[in-house]
Image (cartoon, rainbow, N blue to C red; front, side, top):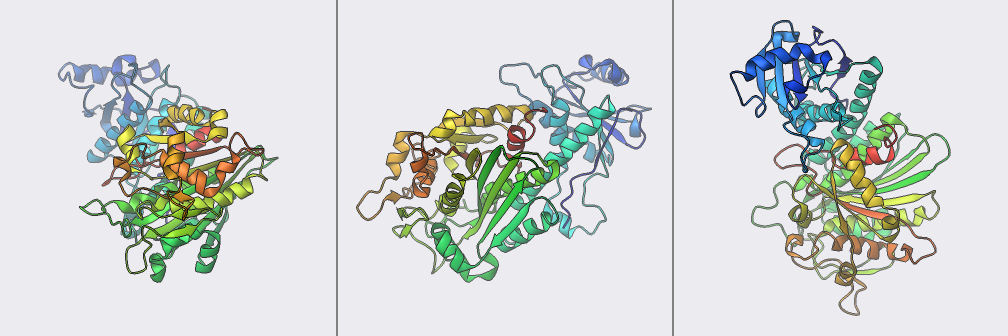
Length: 517
């Protein structure tokens, strides 16, 4: 299993013949700095015969440059109200894809500094690496010697210190996204729960990250009854049986902050008894991208080894199968927090597999230093309908809101283009999940799709708070615990297509790189 990222190296020499083509990412040739003057004349000549040079990726023959080839991918304008740093990653991805078509195997990515976007070169590098990702199944089935689409990706920088920093950061961040894509994007058999556990254990062997995989059905039933309920049908098929994968990282020095992450890892979502009909089941192997993001963040931790930070993670790897033993609407289950939950819709399984793990994190959090709790999930279609694709949504409980947690994540996401919208958990969301009869304390869900439910992406956060017992740790308690729910249904990536790795870049920016970017 190859989990190393695309090899990268830096250079300040545009004539370096170790490369066989240059991919230039900038707004237009007129803004090139003096160090890139040699690229200006060819582009000026080309623009004289093609006025669309700034609208499409073009390939020029330029004698003297590596491979005699220059690929120009314009960002277009970057100074309008609605522009952001993603212009650079988008252009870099298009440029690299065009370079591959041109047969370039050792591209040198050149993204000159921009006065308004000081991290544009790193963002461009991440965009290029996204385009160069090779799926795990392809790597494992590849008969060739290489697991990469190109031999090396060169990154241009003016100074050595800048170049080495660029390579190191790109390598670390991409390594986390690669893990996220491997787990999140692989098919429901290759990344069934037992295989996901094997992948994670092999990945972190010999690293600062500790891993424990729980598989005993009796343990799962006792400790995580809501998760076990979803797992009941799949548990009869050994290769589909659930795993709870626990991870922990503790950096050097006294702990100053503790992050506690729970990720939804539904390896395949049939919808269960409330089956996904009408052709909407395709793509449901991607319902594990929340858990994948947890693993991806730990990979970045293993690479960068931040000090004074403790991170505890849990990946809820479960298949929501349909069959004679599947759970059904109307069933009652008592959560780990001793709340009686009425199942309303078996296709709302994501909140079920996370809620007891969130409760366990809550129990531990009261003894930790400066804890922050999170659930990360491709949870609702309503999230996509509310903000569209490409955007994660974050929402805080009371203590997290007092800490401006969601606002900080949104600000961090803007730095490298892992962007967020902020939602609010309101009183109506809690009312929605109150039990409707004396049989139950909490209603898990209504029987409509989230996209057809008012506040369909906010109410699940209220359920997670109520059913985990976190409602006893609000702003009015003696031990308030900050908790934020992150819905990545829109940002996790297109299907068909490659997962994006969201929101691991924003997480790393917020908690590891905030002082260096």
